[in-house]
Image (cartoon, rainbow, N blue to C red; front, side, top):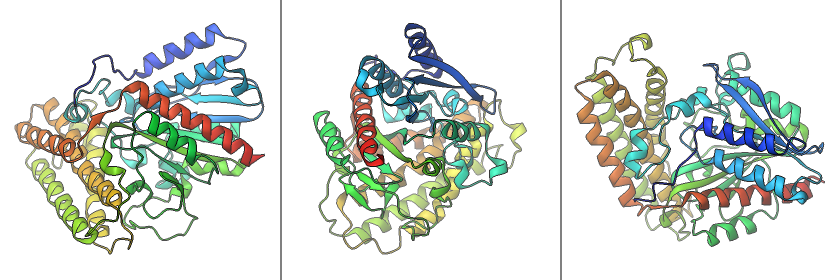
Length: 422
């Protein structure tokens, strides 16, 4: 699980400094501007390259615990500057970090293990995630980050929006709001060359149509969900906002740690029993986190009573725990008849993440408050992190490979979506 110490995800400050240097180096082609501010007043920056009317919008940092998007955006900006053909008839716009407040709380810039990653973990509750907020909140309650992103989409009117995401452990996959014919082949080729497994049946896109291994197309509005307990309406997310301009969105996931268990299309011999066990474990682990919380001085405390800066951590932890009962019930439903080894492994990973993330964020609060329950929760976080990496035989994906694979997939998506759009 160890890797080189120079494997470092840049902070938002480092991203902005690098973008500013690019803009100063090529002022005729490149500009950096602020398009809004976060709830805490942190600026939202967009780096634009090229002058063409037709545009691609690339969104990085929508999930604070997925920091690969920032370096990928900078890598792509340099490529577009260096390769005239990429900007000949297309302008590129890079939102460097969609959630700078979240990025300030997730402090795992050079994780050496899954435990190290979770010891500094933060991922906000769903209503506080800029891309996701419209799927769970009414329009008049959207956070400023979401409003700025929607305004940017309205300005650019992209034929393609790309959202850069990264899973902690697993494989790579793509989600599309509309199909991009031809994308599956270059996506698969890149993954093979960089030794990154393709997650062929991710739980994030369970039951969706596929246009190739690991390339999933979102179903039409009103389609029955395989996991009906999840509260969001995905068609209301910022991903679908580009459709009003004839565009589409690609969400590109790449793993920090790879597992070949998520790239096994063989049929699972007993998926129903496996999912029952995952469901039972999910309930049990969530109850253990809730039991620790109940013994703390913060069990029923107002947010104002928390240590400074800890309120988002508690909201996120409680939000994750509230998802557990419904998902545990969902996983007791009969699985698809053709459920694969990958399908079950992906749900297994999902089931491990929820209580682990809730525990990790709660632990940060307890340590800040020097609460007596912190050591007990620390043992849980350490045990679950270790079990997760051992179960999935985790291996670190070099950062340059994460970035290269994501960048290649963005460029392939832009080329194929351009042909299909025309």
